[in-house]
Structures are given as structure tokens and as C-alpha cells.
Length: 81
Image (cartoon, rainbow, N blue to C red; front, side, top):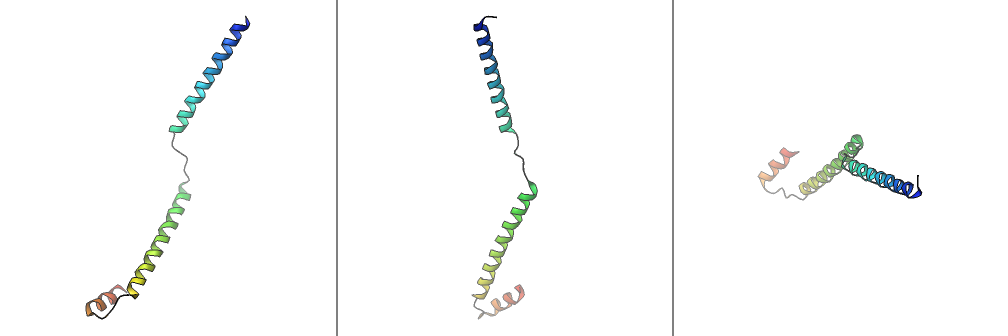
């Protein structure tokens, strides 16, 4: 075969390989990401516990600042405990 034909075939094969790689990359980009559900669950539980702890602290601080001079407030405070 003449060298021009070999160069042309070589160029065609490279272009086909490049197209195939681009197609695979697009396909991989559209695939769902692999997830570690246990790790995600642990992180969510930790964040939720932190929020609950902060909310609990804020609730206790709010109650400690509550003036219990009103009888209704005293009754509600006792019921909440």
C-alpha cells in the first residue's frame, strides 16, 4: 500500500478512537454517581444530632430566662418539665 493510504487509515483510526472516547466520556457523565449510603447516613445523623443539641441548648437557655411571675407561665413551665 502506498504511504498516503497508510497515513489516511491511521488518521481515520485515530479519529474513530477519539470519537469513541468522547462517547464513553459522555455516557459516563450521565451515569449515576457511586454513593456510599452508610457514610451519608452517618453524616446526616451527626448533623441532625448537632442541630438537636443546639436547639435543646437554646430551649434550656430560653426557659432559664423566662420570668415565672405569671401563674400561667409557671404552670406551662412545670408541664414542660
